Length: 331
Image (cartoon, rainbow, N blue to C red):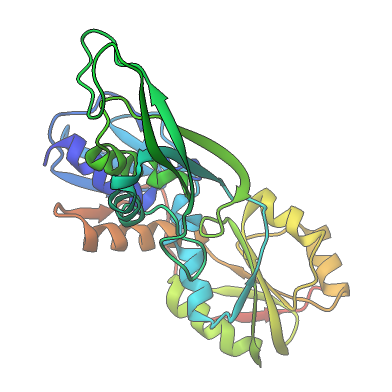
């Protein structure tokens, strides 16, 4: 498969928080398979594209925490499985949205609006096709060599135009701009792309949500099933849960300082953090090998979406079998 075509298909599936794919090394013209791995794999062919959290070898794509935090990643899958009714906004670990502002003749306004919306602009929560339009007059003077859609070379033109605005996540930018150029009638398009302070609610390394009152054990059963983890080590005893906080790394540590969850789902916390949560009455569930679980989940998604073979590799890791889960009282 042509590498450029494959990367275009891969980007919306596994982009990082900036909406990009970081390519490492010299890419071949053709890719025959993808290998998803936490480490540099052994004995890969020149036509194998490695997908890893970080990469110092090539050809490879470094995805950061995308296997975990991407809208189709394991964290979103876990929240769906445990029945989160409402997700409370946490800016931590979330990328910023962008906004397209483009000026278009009134005659092509609806065509342009439909095109950029179909490409992924204008989605806000449970709504799509969210745009804003203002109407005014545009002017331009075609110079020698120009081929204007409206007006004549050497004569200033005045045109009834519309200003169309729509927001989108960074990974949609290429598709949105391509769609804009395909339907816009002007030879030279006047448009702006702005990075906003608004955070993308779909890409998150930490999520906080509310569930119907349910026992912690019932939630953990679903977490084990979906994550593929071999064990959950639980600090505390079973209890009724309504507020769940789930995440990894420094963003989770920061979130713990400003939230009061009933249940924390993570891979590892320091003893001081565990002690503070235990004293506050929270239950902590640490999932074994969570990053590897996220990569396995990503490999399955890629395998079902891409027209080339996708395999997992875990060289250097020993995937041991543990008990279903066991309670550890660290008080």
